[in-house]
View 1 (cartoon, helix red, strand yellow):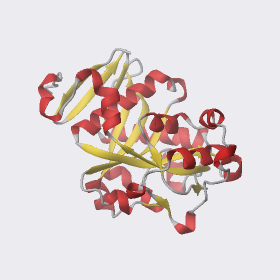
View 2 (tube, rainbow, N blue to C red; view 1 turned 180 degrees about the vertical axis):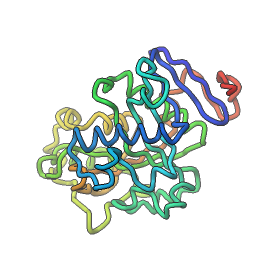
View 3 (cartoon, rainbow, N blue to C red; view 1 turned 90 degrees about the vertical axis):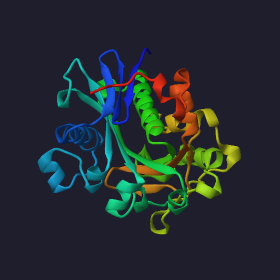
View 4 (cartoon, rainbow, N blue to C red; view 1 turned 180 degrees about the horizontal axis):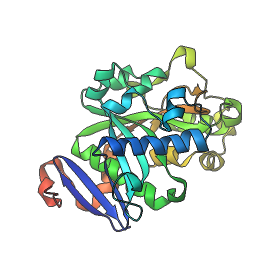
Length: 278
């Protein structure tokens, strides 16, 4: 996939054919991302919206006001709000401080992550419109995340990722696989809050068919694992969204290496990028 990349101190843009990945620049573009989230989470996946969300036709909360919103835009549909076909919500430490906590803290004890002295980033609210759920679109989104990580010197990214359904027993194979094969190291391991904790150790290690387990994982979780991601201890049942959540943590060196390897990016070598002057 041929990708053209422009980076400056204010933002970045990645283009592959008609598709562009960049941060939202206006309130209207953030609303477009929220409308896409509503269409995917509440209309397609049957999550339960609040009355305010249903009236607005948008998925929103207070975290949107302190986040950066990564967008996939199809220029064949439009250059701005008309073209938004994918989104990811990105929250840094200072944004979470303005709210009082990261979103993930409502499900997990993330104090070990928050104690990390370097820059950390919470990812969430990821969704892509149905016709665009292809490998190419997801690769472009990951390149956008890598650009953001590089630009902001992020060392650790984390968040909650979901498996469909609220029956942990029905998800015993992928949950057990994640626990036995991808549990985060103790120094950075999130743990589900006691009142929300669901044990992931539903099968012993000897009974896990790794190939079958991996096939049962959602593409987003497999994407995190491919870049060295780990999971926290315990799953959380999210009744509003009809999902079973797991905590994800990723040290970002593998992400930037994988998606910007061909630029040989180093923080002291930014001039090798094509800079946007606007």
